[in-house]
Image (cartoon, rainbow, N blue to C red; front, side):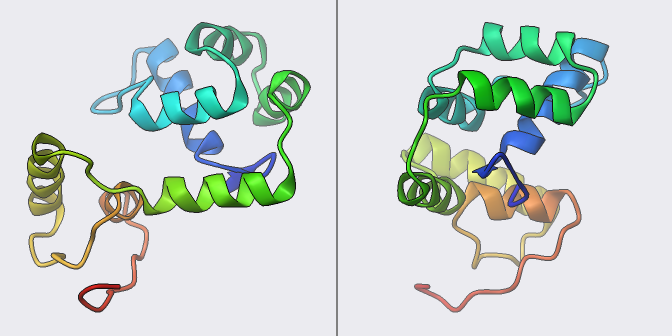
Length: 136
């Protein structure tokens, strides 16, 4: 989730999820999910365009080259701010919070310190997510 491609958090994950959907091996992955849609909106592309690019480019490098050609340009500051907001984004409604807690509890109910979707995804996929103090 935190790995960047072309400076964008989530792009590597979005490529992997799109490939999995195209191959019919997505399991519980959802593409395009709300985080994918946020990245595509920020880049000024559609899911159909992105899917076509992934179909046409068998490597991450090819998709990244395409992405850099067509994505809306942003300053380094804008990109860093967007990445930070995406990685800190948590549930935005009572329904979303209920889903967040359900997913968290299925992975590790002791991690009540988690508040961001990115942290939950990292934990679910076996990456280390440092414990946070309450309120941080």
